[in-house]
Length: 323
Image (cartoon, rainbow, N blue to C red; front, side):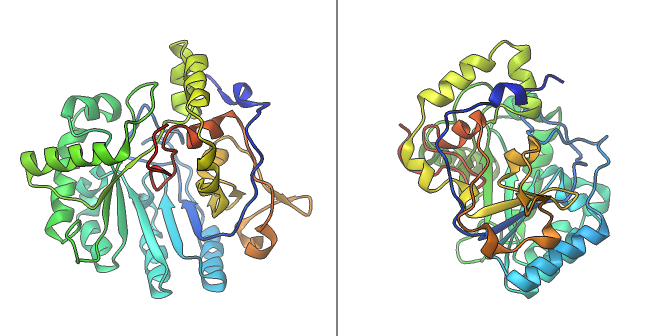
């Protein structure tokens, strides 16, 4: 795989400082039941990296002692971790909102038949990947048969009340472009998704998050192999919107890798842009929110992906203005 990291530094991206830690985003491991072209963590079925029981205990200690507003669980497929359900249970007992970054097909796995019920019982917010409402686009990006399994997963969640107004069960979908271009306006695309999925399958959901593909890891390698890396970076820089600096996710979020090390965001994690405190690489076991406030955030050319057009974050667009 071609490495895009050397192409991302130095950068002229504006300096950023952290405000707080409202969201603790935890990558439980790189094992996944899918391999997607756009995957910025390079996850897949052959990956074996998984968070140890000791580090999971460190995460739980942080939740107990600091009580962030949100625990955001990701991977790989986070549900494949043996202690996924324990983490969810601990967090919900502490009244911490839990997000599960779900690829939907995991709900069809033989050993996960009760997963949807577990998520509903704990009122976990499901953020589900569905890069298009058309079968050919989904299967082209994520693999043959993924679309049908994704639709089946959405129907299973709907049957439990996910996506229903007033149910308290939030179901949000995620759109990633299938090529080297920016997502369309989130609001308009959300309406298209809702119309198409309702008419075709009777599926409903709460909202759609549009997320810009980052020029790193698997997608960065893809861009280089197609000789599109420079043109994609030009696109991101040309669509830069200064207003998005106020709401980029790294200002109120930290990302924890499967070994327990702390990063400014999920993308910096994949680029191994380490955070240090007192000359030591910062680990979740030593993470203290007070020492993070006002700290400089690691930046690179990839940060233009979060500020282009409507902006991009793990919660979708940052503004209603597409630039």
